[in-house]
Image (cartoon, rainbow, N blue to C red):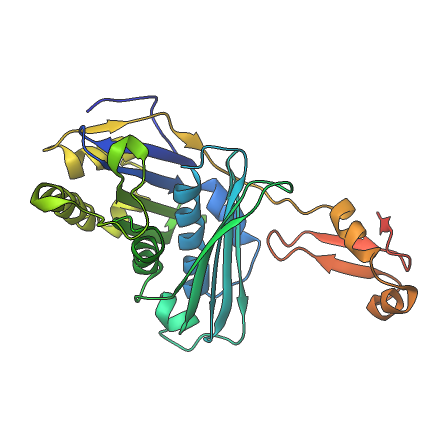
Length: 306
C-alpha cells in the first residue's frame, strides 16, 4: 500500500483503489465529534444521527477544491424535523438537529427519526459566488443509504457509504463520543465527471470493478470505523489489498462554530425598537447558538453586553 503521512483522530484520509477510478475518503472523528455532541442533550439515537451527518459531510467536503463549505440538510416529518451539518475547507465542522417531539422508544436511524422528507447538499463558495444545491427525496433506512441515493440521482456517481457513531470508555470510566465513516465513489477520468444523464458505468469491466469495490466496502464493520487501535490505513488495506490502495495526505478536522456576538448583533439591528423590546427577558435579549450552544446577551438596543 502506498502511504502518505499517517492519519489519526479528527482526520479525513483520501484514498484510491489501485490505479482505478474508484476513489474515496475515510473519517475518524474523536475529540471533535465529542465536543459537538456534548454541547447538546440529544437522546442517543438523535446524537448518533447527528454524528453520522458530521462524518458524512466532512468526508464529502474534504473533496472541495476551492475555499468554501459544504452544507448537508435533511428535513422530514418525523420526530427530528431537521438535521444540519457543514464543513469548511479549513477543516471546521459543526452539526446539530431540531426536534419536533421526543423520538419513540426503539426509533433508530434516518427513516425512523425523520420519516419522509428530502435531503439537500449545498456548496457555498462565498458571498460573491453563486451557490450550487442538489435536492433529492430521502430514500433508504439510513443516512448512508440516503447519501448513496443522492449521488446516484443528483450527480450520477456510483457511491457506497458506511457510517458509525458510538461511545467508547476511557480509563477512569469517562465516556466519549466517536464517529467514523468510509465513502467510495466511481469517479472516471482521474477526477472528472461524466455529463448529466450519461451512463455511470460504461461496459462490463467498469461494472465489475465498481461492484467489487462496493462489495468490499460493505464488509466494513461498525466497530472497525470506531476502533482507536485500528488505523484508517490498516482498515483500507484490509478492504482493498487485492487491488492495491493508495492513501494521500490526511485533512485535519476540528469542531468549530462560526457564531459570534457581532454576527448576532448585526441581525438584531434589523429589528425596530418594539420588536427588540418584545425579545427582552429579565433585562436582556438572550440568544443561544443552535450549533455550539454558546449563549450571548444583548441590551434593549440589540447591542452586545458582557
